[in-house]
Image (cartoon, rainbow, N blue to C red; front, side):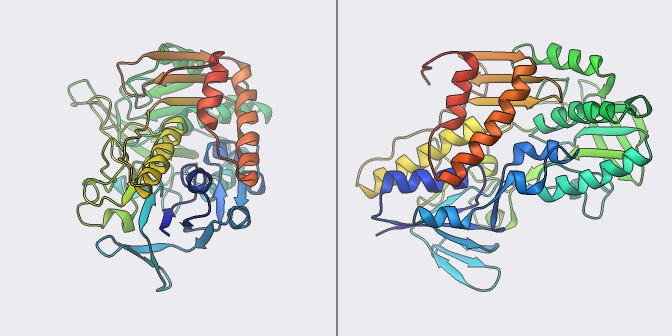
Length: 424
């Protein structure tokens, strides 16, 4: 009997556990280790940050549902991975041995790379975690009492831009409902070279469509923006030209600011010798397997993939749910193959699917593969996307509670595109 340990209980880790149990049956032991005792549906955080959701609506106490599938669960932080001896060292001194380790931790939020940023000791908010979204909502309530300038955007080296676009548009709509939008100028400050780049080099006419949405909402923007530091109520931004030279320096005042940070690998993962690149992301081969440790696999935000293209201000490539889902399936199939004495052959398809809510409408895109050139580029907008994301949220949380494994992101991507089958 092999012991498979899955490190992380997010959008990659929990489905990985369910799929692993379904494929391996009861012949092997599966354990999920996570720093908290709950699953959080991160795509809903921009709604929570304006009070359109509450914490109980987008989190699930995951242990009881894993137990129903005979999957072990440990809700403690991992302080160290002893990859040479196949051991996890937990925060309380306990150890966990493994035969295979699947790393789906997500990322460390690198607020420290921009002085004065972040919700814990800094002056900007975040929607990257449910805790941060709750803090952002508290700051939003202060904005309602004292309206003034708002900044939304993404810092240098950021790779997940979608939530920033969502939050800017959702915030616009929320302020309209409170009848104070006219008192709150919004500026979008992003490291992207243009609006709609999304870390993907754009998808279809994402540039034109998202610029149009911002114009309609009177949201100004600064691109190629290198945020250098933040003070209480003031952000300092260098706007670069295409050659990476400073074009203009901005001192932007704000009453409320939400800036997505750069990502790095979490410490326990980043500290494993020869496992990660310099920013702490796990280096994997085409089978999602560590290039150094053959019994370690990894999927999701925590893996190393190159940026789509060089940009004046560094940007990363996002790891969307569709892409993560395909990585997880490849890992499950590869571990199963190895346990059966078969060659490891499965590969992730690395496709992108995104439903972005814009408050009273939305934008959806599918990019296959995620990194261009692409076989499929599909980008649409409309109020139906707003309702589709709400439906996706409810369905995903339902499946988490039911313990059902299925290619949910792919299923919805195909449904959005109105096709029955798409060859990968």
